[in-house]
Structures are given as structure tokens and as C-alpha cells.
Length: 97
Image (spheres, rainbow, N blue to C red):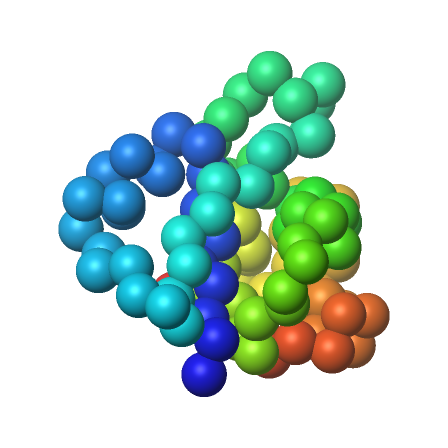
């Protein structure tokens, strides 16, 4: 399966050294647009920001792995949007890790 591991800009360098990237596994930093976009931590990423990032992609993955720190215990981001909305909007399976 084509898998995208989405992460913050800050974590990208560390994860790039830890994860074996293959033809079917991509690692991408998602630009943070929340609070003016000048804070790069994963905790401020939003479903809408991830959706915007995915829509720029030429080849959509079959599954997206997202960091759990984005979501509260009910699966909602800082704007109150549930991660399942991304599945419904884009049509891609989302897993929280």
C-alpha cells in the first residue's frame, strides 16, 4: 500500500533518520498554518492543514499516518474537527500513531 507519514516540520529531520523510506512509504512535513503558521510543532497541526497538504500531492496515498498529539482523546484537532472527516473528504484511510 502507498503510505504517507505526515509530521511536523520540526520532527521531519529526526523521523527521516529513523524511518526507512521506500517506494511505497513517504515521509512529508506538513506546513502549519495555525496561529499564523510561525509555530512548527505537530500539536498545532489541523485536519484542514493536512487536507490542504494532501490536495497538493500528485499521487495520493492509500493510508495516512498522523501523530496522535494533533488530536484530543475524542479524535478532534484544535478546531474541533474529527480526523475521520479527512477520510470522508479525501477518501484516504487515516491512522493515528
